[in-house]
Image (cartoon, one colour):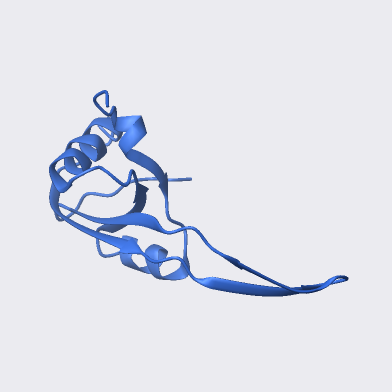
Length: 101
């Protein structure tokens, strides 16, 4: 496997009610590549947001498990699964922030 670039490691920011609330405390949530480690995630965030001159203090990583989803259609009940994905919560140095919008 070739080396991962910063754009390969950080897939997208996670926009949810909880993640927006945490961003006020300097914690930002990203969906990340399943093979990326904490050191790579830290370097990727600092590289992608170098215009804001961010310094990453801590990285917490977790894998969200897939969940069963059911929905009704004309043909009856259909069951499926959501895909599992990896999430990183990045803490920045005090006073720093990232603008998404």
